[in-house]
Length: 143
Image (cartoon, rainbow, N blue to C red; front, side, top):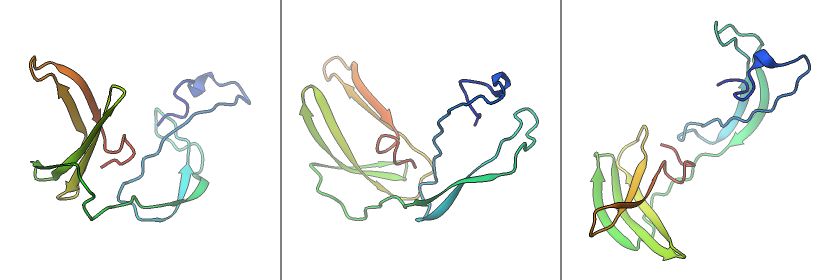
């Protein structure tokens, strides 16, 4: 990742301050433990390490909560997707023009990556009227 996407270091004056935010996605199967966040600066063109690696934080990381019992489901379903996922059912309610859909999945094996594509079609015309494409739990539960 670049040091500062909005402001290349080639434009930095001496003593300039820059703020840049980064999201670091941990492996979703990472066990609970204490981890160190380290940082080093590398020359972009050559890959030469410009600074020794620095530990900038030590933090506790908690494993993602896993559920192994089926919760109550409003509408049962039994669809298998690619021998990897089973859709057990869904919950549905509507309020103020918003359709709330909760999908209940069961992993049949460990997955590398997936997204869900939920599309709402008009029954009579077949026209797509709404859609939501995402990684589980609004990108907070990656596979």
